Image (tube, rainbow over all chains, first blue to last red; front, side, top):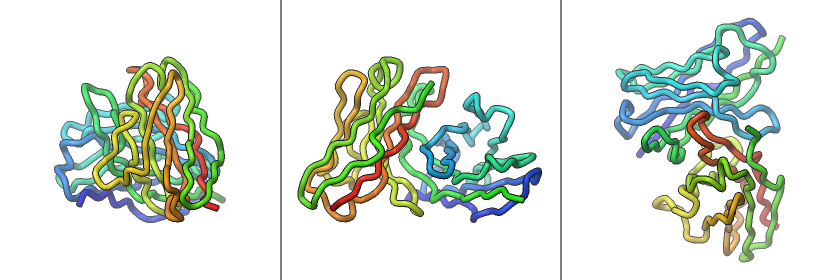
Length: 122
Length: 111
């Protein structure tokens, strides 16, 4: 069974750093792109960025370029989303997702993680 | 680019059919057949229900169907059941310069 299991909820203060994780199982982790999606409170979904674990090729949405770092370690089938300095506006649920891609086009998300709640508050 | 437009809510009684729309532009929904629909029960992982406008993944009941006309895609849920009550999101490819767009989500209530 294909699964993406994310790390647990985090409560941080503004200025803190944070790295959350997404561990894949039930498939060849390095052969599929992984994406990260943000859901702010009461809002819809937004693409943050994607990464190909085999070679760490990554792309970011303009809104998130320079704000977060997406990485992956194929040896442990895990992708990461990292912040150097959190802001209160980073409070959201973050989902990782396995992507179905064709010729560089995201066709669909065929598996989602359960989400990680990140709360940033002083 | 703006998010795709979905109605915030939809509802229907058990056994009825309900259709949720997802409106974009000719640069996204209207320009490509890469529209997906996801079901999300809060607190759980979202689930793929429809991809490439009208294709159903294995295991998704045929009560769920997708279609597209012009710049608007639609998800129809027939024979509504209590467990269909959830949030539904559409998404679309939007060209090579971005990762794609999501709709704002529709809360489906089974009355």
